[in-house]
Length: 224
Image (cartoon, rainbow, N blue to C red; front, side, top):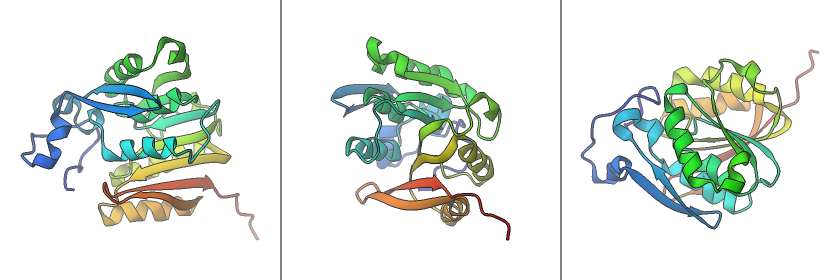
């Protein structure tokens, strides 16, 4: 899939391939956590940050399968885009910080507000997070679960993404990353991750070609 070669908020020219036409729709509808979810999309304005990718859908399916505990847990989503994964986590009882880069926040906030009932809105907060920057605003090791759907694709972001994961995770934090393995560099990122985290594949959606990996921090190595 040769689409994603630039930063997440760069708009793209209309692609004539029929398989990609759903990305150019102004909205996308789903049903998760026993609720209908309708998300605005804006490919022309915000590019890949403003459309729902298959990895987000597969992540939500995995959450519904009960792969991780959500009720009452402290959760943060990285590179949230339209907010689907964070919204579903909040609907399933988690306390979620839903993050993306600053240009996407108004769009993201509107989707969150539209799709969370009033009694659930306190469970989700939208916050700016550019990986590797301003991490002191987030409690070190302060989360039970870190979620990322289709955020592994741009080599320049790998090092700051790893720094971010290391900051957010304690020894008991679980990280769920859902992605396609498109290029050799994607496999290289998993290799980088395995130097600092214990990584296992916990789910594979064959139809959408999406892998879900669960990672947990390795204990610090003692110098011999």
